[in-house]
Structure formats: structure tokens, C-alpha cells
Image (cartoon, rainbow, N blue to C red; front, side, top):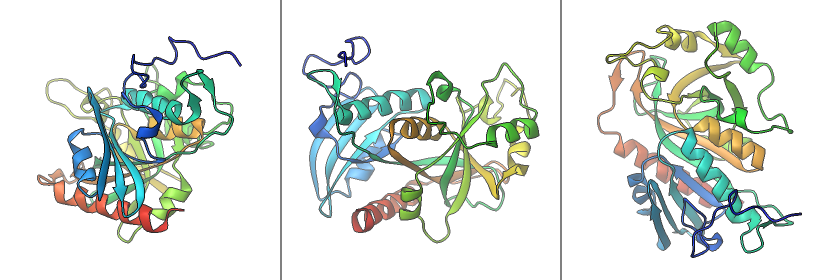
Length: 294
């Protein structure tokens, strides 16, 4: 095949990938993704040894060893647009020969675990609870910019939701994609909430917050809260998982999201100090992927 062009695959003068500033041997096959750059240190503080530390803009990377397993912690920043950068560049680091700009004959499958925070939309989800995203729904539209020969979306779910919610243009059509069953099973635990997570292209209007501007559908949270599909309900809002699941499915990687609920939009509660809950979640994830992930 022809080499990938210099404008499609951009490398820095030192040979590192354009935004992440990483070379292939600086990432592990298990990657913990966090939004906040400061949370990378919260993950790496658990490591027994740190081998690599890199940063560029909001993309901070730390690769080290935890109980004998090599793990990378990487911050994506906020939003599905940043996930588009991170996923494509991580995939290139493991599946493209950067010197020849050609695909490697044997493709690697990364394990991508997003640890984040989110807003719950049901009163029975207490702030501090862990929500596991079985299915990510995207209001952002990023998936629609990629050709999907494998048909990775959940059949019938988008149509069912759009009809139920009265979804109209010019908003992008929602899309829904399942997370990794392997990682979901590996990281499951008592007391977790599972179901559908909605990823939005913004924090205010798209999540029906109003300061001086009014959301186009003020009843959207109530609609989300009353919708179900095949026994699953929509549990929470965040801003990254739809793109993470879409690009992981299209590229052949495993992805799962676990979020601490720090706000409850139904009860209007907010967890002011959520650092301990996030740290507990980080510890649980590290222990399970170390002890049980083969």
C-alpha cells in the first residue's frame, strides 16, 4: 500500500506523534484515560515505578508499572474532539510503522479505560456512586464523520430514542455504541450502576444548564430519565465516551468508561470533594486489571 501522507499522519521533528508527543515504546497496551491533566498524577501516584512522562497542551502522559503490569495514564482534556485526536494517535503508535508510514501486518488491540466524573439524572443515584457505561450515546455527531463498514452502532436504539424524545434537526442524529464486554465484566463490582451514558458536545446548553441562555429543549433531562431500551435506562451525562466507544469499535480496540457521579441533576445535589471517590475508583481499576486481565 502507499505510505500515509505527511498531512494525514503528522510527526514532530523527533519522530513523535503530533499532539501526544509520544513514540511507540512510550505507551502500554493498557491505557487509563482521564479528562483532567491533573488526574494523571492521581493515577501515577499508585504506580510502583514511572518510566515515561510527557506533556503537550492538555495531553499529559505517564507510563509506569503497577504490581508488575505496564500501564499508561493519559489525559484527553474535555470533549469528543479531543478523543478524536487521542484515539487516532494512540492507534497510529501501535498499528502504524511510523518510519515507513505504512500499516503493520499484525494489528494490536489496546485496552482503553476511561475514569471520569459525570452528572447523574436519576434521584436514586447518589453522588459518589460509580456509573459504568454499558452503552455510550453521542449527541456530538463525531461518529458520523467516519465510514462504518462494520456497523458498530446498537441496532434500533437511535431510532427508538429519537422518536421518544421528539429529536429534530438541525441537531446531529444521536448514535449509540456498546462498550467492551470484556472490560465491563472485568471491572464490574458491587454497588455499581450500569446502563446508557449520554455524551454531549458541551457542558451548558447541551446538558440543559441555563445561566443566561436557554436550552432548546428544557425538558430533555425528563425525557432522558424516562427512556428505556432493552432493559437499560440512561443514567448520566458526560462529554467523551461516545467518541471513545465509536473510534475504539471502528479501530478494533476495547474501551469502557467508569465515572463517579459528582452531581445529581434530579435531586440537585453536588459532591463538593469528589477526589477520594475518584481515587478509590482508580485503585479498584488498577487492582482488577493487574490481578485478572490476561
